[in-house]
Amino acid sequence: MSNRSWDTEKLVSIIRRVAKDELLPRFTKVKHSKKLDGSILTEADLAVQTAIEKKLKQLDASILFLSEEMTLEEQENILQQPDKAAWILDPLDGTTNFAAGIPYYAVSLALIEQGQPALGIVYDPERDECFVAEKDKGATLNGNPVMKSDETVLLKNAVACVDLKRLPEELAIKIVTQHPFRSQRSYGGVALDWCWMAMGRFDVYLHGKQNIWDYAAGQLIYSESGGLSCTLSGEPVFIQNLQARSGVAAASQDLFTEWTNWLGIKNADRVS
Image (cartoon, rainbow, N blue to C red; front, side, top):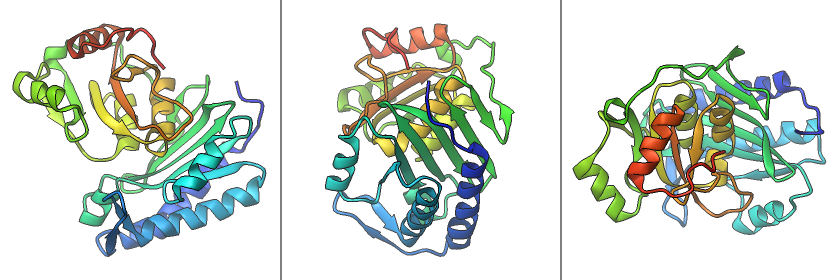
């Protein structure tokens, strides 16, 4: 449990306001450039980062701040201080969608304390859906509790969210040629993917490579909703460093067992 107190409602208000002021007016109207790793950057990413960083520092200047749009050296320096609390911000998760005019993107903010996520906020301004979780306190959507469904779904009947692009080639081919589920989707926004899993909009999930700012808030929200997850190596998803992580999840214990068995994951009982 966290020893720090924070005003969750105030944080939610900040995220909502910045997203509405900086993202919605630019949607379908923004130009983009490519970063060195080939990913897309827009002026909206930078505007959201600047606005949220300023407001967070006004709330508590002692908490470190890490954003996707910072330099690698800056990010590593922050994550190498596990004794200090740190905000982890993805100012625009789903930048490619945003730049292309596809309404599936979000602002994602996590608070890391003692090496683990203590708070996660993911806000989707297109649908005005704000997902929030505090460690060991459950998850909410717009203030209403997110509850795990008691419905049992077999893998053959499941709706899957799978990002094929970042999977090992052999596994990607197996999924394409031997898919064990009923239907598959991929929308291009990790933070919202985890939140939609929490809501039961997908039954199983698979992503091969996501960064700490992509998943820190969303995976906490999913976990606090009662969901089960691990990496393709059977490890907990969250780790406080810049190593990209895979993500595997399912809506129930039986489905999680069936899905991880199909994927050939050992030690999948180590969930987070």
